[in-house]
Length: 446
Image (cartoon, rainbow, N blue to C red):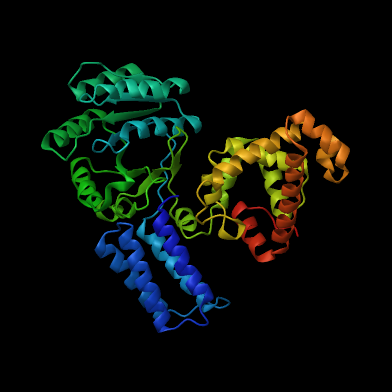
């Protein structure tokens, strides 16, 4: 979970607001203290944490809720808006021919992120090439080639060459008409004059349109000074935060944007080459506080299957009208969307997302879903369209055909019935349904 500890604390604070008999000065003071504690534990810089909570307190005590908004909803909105302000404004990276430079210290995930970024632009239809300009770590060139080879992305390097600026110059000539050129530079264990001098020389040769600072989410409050030093050297245009999926903290890296005023543009959320997300502050904060990110869920779904199929599955999921055949499609789609834990994190709390899942439960569920798909492979089309016809003799046949037991088949049927009841209950909750329809940009037909 991204910033797990902070997310849990924030969701606890929002529950306290929801359960309070009324909103008063004492409750707002208690909420502010809870938020301060949560932010500091997440390594958000002390001054920033107190500035943010002071703004929340002032707005909570002085602003009147807009017409039609309750005091509780108004306080939640204030907290949400201030958290979005903390992590900075959204910035889109244009899809055009350009050169990019990656900078950062050793161990921050810079080389892996270079490959992930190349994949990101390749999926956008751009012709991408990489220059391996880390001349101090012998394995960097080989690592990039291994990561880029399955993607058919060219990697230029000169093994044994110690002049990074020359590698970049020759690389630009070699890559020719490549639209997006991404340069991986050397790191150090600490900010040294030699490192700063080298990246300045590379910057002159490259004339990069984007200069991305790569930071590990676990870096803590050292993020600020580090960001400032790189910004002074090459005028950083954006920050990429890595390993945000495994960090219980990460607030230091997130709040480093306040030092450089260079926005976070991407976040690394996993080990796969696909696990790089464009940073969208409102959607990120929505996930953090348990509101989910259904739009991101749909984007993942659309990558996993044809757009029309994904939209149809989503409509049936929201309406509660679906068969075993539809459920099979959903499971198939889930299997291609990555780890179930990440998918769950995109769902609002009311649909089972946004909270901590018991240890081992995700793995058990993922294994069970695979078994269910095998069972459904042994069903006829009629059985998938109308599960009501599946009685004892059919259950025995399906179990034999799938190499499972009648008990497993009955578990599947019970799972289906439970899911159908849940979806019907959800579709009758008009307020939540309309909120999700709006996120998905579907017209609310009911």
